Length: 178
Image (cartoon, rainbow, N blue to C red; front, side, top):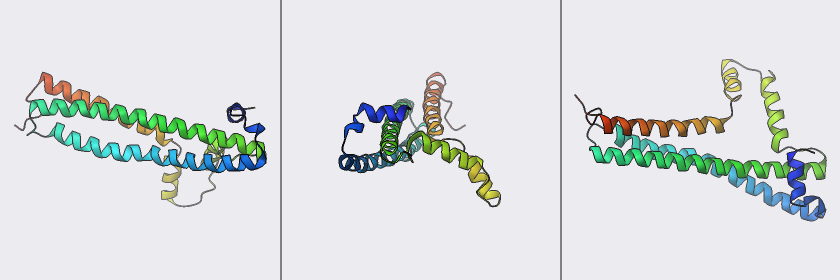
């Protein structure tokens, strides 16, 4: 029994009638899709905000106080975005694992959760996808998960904003045009 099965049993899904399980499955699948959609909206919206703030931070015409405020806001927004992204990801993974547990109870196989990740990874490593250099690039780039990359992006925004704030505080003319 893996984590997905334990999760399904912790919700006592094994005691549900087949009809109830089918209804619960549809509801969970819709909720998992909602979490997935929310998950990938966070980077899009956050990048827009961060771009605006870094335009203020790096502008030579921005006052010292405005730059410090923009740096603080950039750190707060990147931190909040990171926390929101992590929370949405946790909820999406929870529901995917719960769906996998229900699928194994009902169908003896699962298409969600860890099984999906393993099968997709194996498919990607195989050279089943024929094609040219572009297909090779797609295959290679999809071997890395997007979630850790976005965590690194938000951490980079935090470090960058703190670095700019420190530079502006220690060297007030650093961002001025010579």
